[in-house]
Image (cartoon, rainbow, N blue to C red; front, side, top):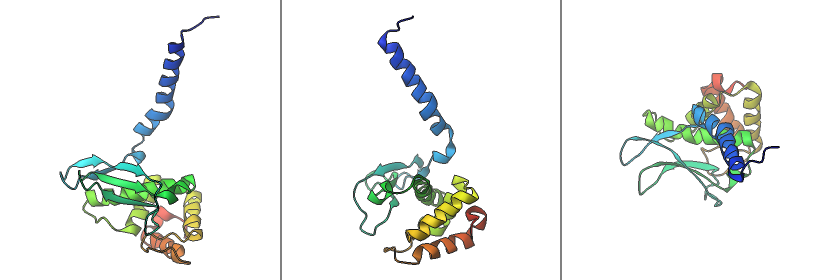
Amino acid sequence: MIRWPAYVGWRIMQVGFITIVVLPVLANPAFACTGINIKTNKAQTVRQVFTSKSHPQRYIAAASFDPATGRPLITYYRRYSRLPGYYKSFVRHHECCHHIHRRRGQGFGDEIGANCCALRRMRVSKSLARKIKGYMIRQNINSDVAINSPGVGADFWVRTYSRCPGSARVK
């Protein structure tokens, strides 16, 4: 039996982690998010910030900019941590799409456009679109309104579907 020094085992674990976890994320452009720095007007990677605070209007996440540096930001609030994984992915892509739309000069606050963009970026299957739709309706999620009241999730999905049926796939 060969006895390897401890540092060899540690090095193998590091290489394995980089190969299995880091490289696939870096190689997958769907996880990349680039926006425009509002102070320099140059493309910059969006910084993602996770907080345990609640948003005053109950938002799950918000696309914005660092007031000091102008760097594009996505802030994920407390509600984000309780979402199922597939919906977290949708929210992340949705917020990234706000920055993409601004970079392309298509407006920053278009919620339905951000939904369509997120569904396209995720390349959702019919079953995943059905899960996203169901969650949005059950939880009455609608980022156009401050309070998620009964029926607003269904309305939000109908408006998303009518504007991007190829992406939403589920009526």
